[in-house]
Length: 126
Image 1 (tube, rainbow, N blue to C red):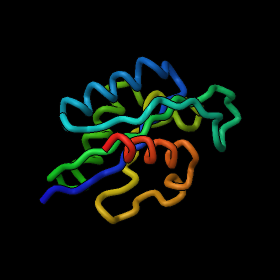
Image 2: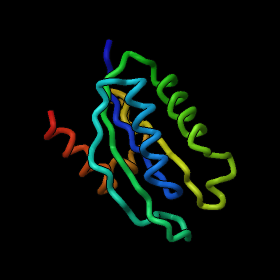
Image 3: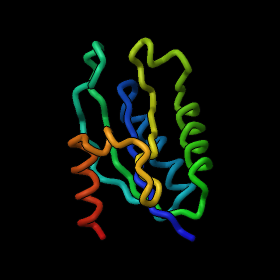
Image 4: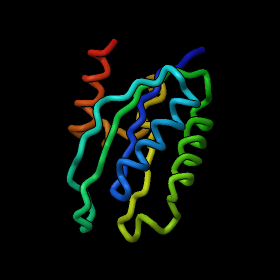
């Protein structure tokens, strides 16, 4: 059975390069994935003033939730993400699974403007 998923991709370090890597890798894993327009946002909960590049993506898959999360973490590591990076407010790449079918995994993130805008944009593409 296919399950719809909503991802949010973000970076505040080598933003364009890392988001390009994420898009390329995700598209190789999920060829029908659709991406909203890249959006730049001010950092939340960081003192580092580096803006974030964020992008929302929608895909359908028969992969279990744990496998999608594992694949996302693998791509993050490929972009150079290290365990201690958040403490120094460096986010090379962050790929979060926000929705897996009807299961909400990150309710706070779903309320963010760039996620709401990205979802609406992708719905219009359908």
